[in-house]
Amino acid sequence: MKALERVSTALAQAAGTLAKLLLLFVVCILFLQVVLRFGFNAALPWPEEASRYAMIWVVMLVGSVLVRDEQLIAVDFFDRFWPRRVIVARNVLYRVLLFAVLAVLMVEGWKQAVTAWPRTTAATQISWFWPYLAVPLGAGLMLFQMVFLVVRDVSRVLARGAAR
Image 1: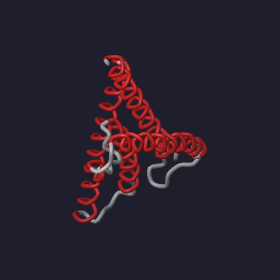
Image 2 (image 1 turned 180 degrees about the vertical axis):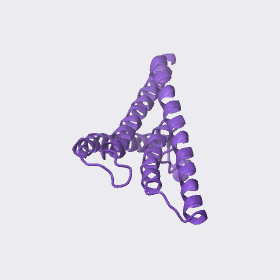
Image 3 (image 1 turned 135 degrees about the vertical axis):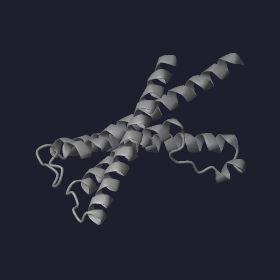
Image 4 (image 1 turned 60 degrees about the horizontal axis):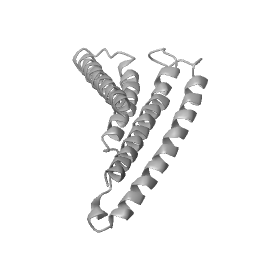
């Protein structure tokens, strides 16, 4: 369990750091574009496209951090009114549904990325594979973090049961 937790933490830190760097990149190139466009009346052709694809990567990378921290989706308004068993059942259902969605997103996203390999983007002239890769990679990272949470929770329940 400790090894899995270390891998989960390392992946979350790497995803968070890469997302921060990409967000900084977006800020810098868009600032450059605004200065060039309005200050010198000479815009570059690629910053809007590059920033769009970088933001897709940011969202998909941060999604895995949010899943790990259990902050992706939380509707806990009714938790104080519901019995603990209902909350546990809701959480299990939520994880099963999210697992299914992420698995489909990862598989279908990979198919789309591979299909897009031969085409290139308009302004940056990179393969469409790279923007599309954000979806299956992000979904895979979220899926890994989801599996980590399930293993962690099950091991805690088993540890509590053994302690009784």
